[in-house]
Length: 601
Ligand SMILES: [Zn+2]
Image (cartoon, rainbow, N blue to C red; front, side, top):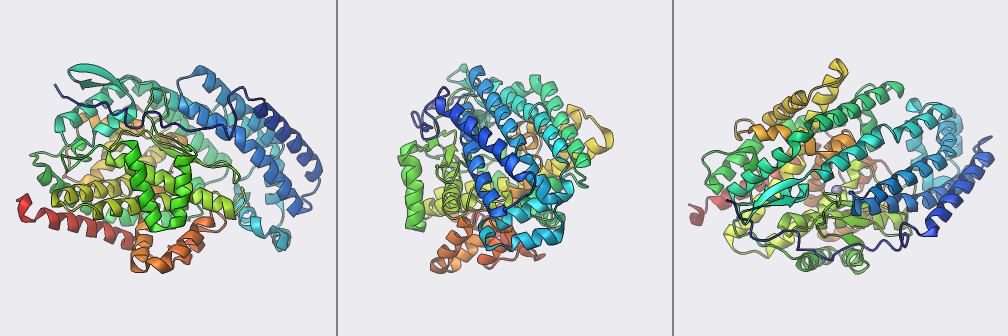
């Protein structure tokens, strides 16, 4: 029997967030008061501006006030539900708030519709108003949707129906996934595990533990194949309908538009990464050797190379991460510290808590909130560093730009998070002198880079196959999805990995496929972008930091290419992606070199 000596649920016990700056509780009368005020303001807004969008600066000031009022109950209900997704009371609360917000939103919809209806010349003339400087990019961005926006009445119906279609399937997915009991063997006993805990076991240096994780996942997921297949089919069908209704051509078009990236750039990214797939096999061959395995299975891919990997209590994680951010820049350190001091982080592992990790943006006058499921391994330390990067980005943007422009597009939203991970990684690596441990750390980082670059492109590849097949054939079987999954993964790993029968369940656990189709390529985009950025930082630390802060504080107020240009990067160059991929190759080269040292022979 496999033994897992410690329960990984105890490493961050008691580290919970304090939501009281939002509301005192679910019964706080202020929730209703805010919703009512937002509702009244929205009705007045409609009455005042529907006849004419004038004056535009005054309209936007009123609009921002309403959006701010709506954000608070929206965020609170989302975070409150994430704390305990198995609570019927919280689920009902989330749904109730969502419906109320949709109702309020229905009074605001005319604004986007009317704004997009204006002729090009009129819009341009209005945008020249210096009073609009702070919202110009937001207004321009809205107009990109002009060709895909419906009439106001149709938009209202779409918004209401979303709550019982794609949003409903999204929530059903979360509820199904969070309620699946996974079981692992611990001290000879069968113990219930959350999905996050099972996924963490794939990083174990002990193969029997990894194999058990793979079996636990398959055993838990198999009985839910039918419902998960149905949910995904409905998401695909909804997406197809949306493409048709909104006059989009390619399934990725809506995501690309909101990312402010053209299809050509995304295709170049996918192609560049696919061209570099052989690096995956090269690295897995090294890993197989380092792990001393005769065969390399799918569940071996994330195995920790350093068998003695330490468990890091949350307090220690906090000091490592804070020291790293402080060394990078005292200002970044000060901001990161606020998250711990003011309890903006929920880190403990609890049954029913939402899996994974996120940093939730609130309003510029309030803090972002971070959720992680901290099990004490080094990857979790990196996750904390990652989410704090988001936090830093959001705090800086919140100070500089208004609520309408603080949201960076996905491709840029991962900049500070991935950069934060790099800083903390280098800090940990530089403090480690033992070559075995250094190699372990380096391989861990390569694993993460691969998960973010190669794997996300393979995930996108899977999605493309699923969406295209859905378009051609309609509803698909679970087996078909599993086939696409294996095909996309096979292309990435070549013959360096044996994909087992259990690997066929892989597509079922990716929430992005459900919540936000084609989200994943943004990770690869961001990672390669950050690797290029990191290179600039290493070349000239002093000169880079003010540029970096400038980039982050702009939030979503400029196009990605303009933000990248601040650091001297040109994302339209055909060889842009090769620079980041080259750095990955260097990492693998370093690992190979270290592994060839005498002590490893
Ligand atoms: Zn992130």
